Length: 390
Image 1: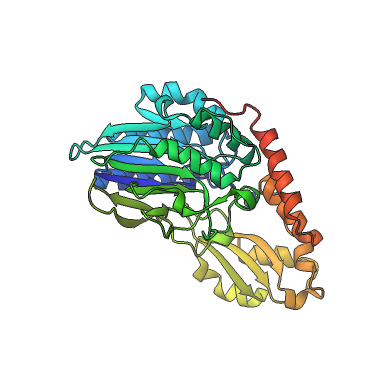
Image 2: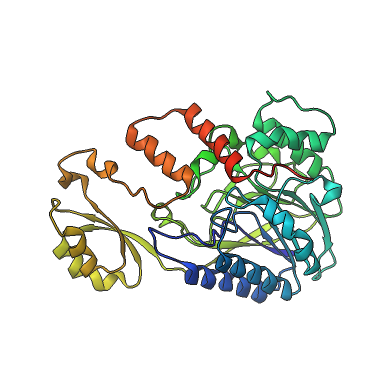
């Protein structure tokens, strides 16, 4: 059977105050066309469909229409919540989307309650089992483990051990004569960050080894890290990466979706399909005069500019005049007169609460794992008050 693996759409994400909904619409339209062209049996969306837990009506409309367009192709469509999504909202829409043939999973669910999905591939009749693990915050890991094992879990247990227990229960539904897929929104140990992740929910106790996936798994479709990569394990453990660079830290990442062919008895074959609809992000350096001379070569790219001359009144405006798509303008540290100046005035108006807090810690010269961990836990409580439901 053949399926498409994608994740981390982050619909609604702005870049330095610039709305990108039209770009996001073009990217998702391109993904639908890839699914159509390759006549896939299923599309797996491994979390972070939205940029935040309270997406705008326009963002929700775009995601819902995309999922329905994929379903209209006749393929199975399965999506789970990432750490940027609101799991309660996913579960609220679950019955309605189910009527349309689309599977949404917000919170951890037991296998018999929707944590495992089974279908028969339309192309070759191959029976397929999909184990679903949406993002699991540390404070809900204990309750999730208890749900799966039907026995009290020790609150002092390590996060990765509880993830093992949850996945063990879900993947326990795999069979030798089926294509066995796992889909999860997780940070893998030794995974490479893409550059735009929510760091407070990507480090510390949130990291688990790729060995959590069993050898019986035909393919593990991951979301959360924005860079396309595979981790060494007994089965293919793959991040598709984001199909659109969400920040300048991701400007060099390839934007792809993964086309996967799998059978019950052979290793999965993976083909990266480039996604090219979004505008390129680029970092450029030079004096105002040098940048003006190069301006025609930047096209419609969004730019982060390091100006190689001392600060002066009107400098930012001068750069914007010659480079209208300059979304971020900084003075090269060599010309700032102070090694701290370039970080002291970093943008504090855009980004998630975790990103802003990480910037504050960086600017304050404070790298305290306990403080960042506490902030992540408090953020979970504020942004996900509904808790875990089966």
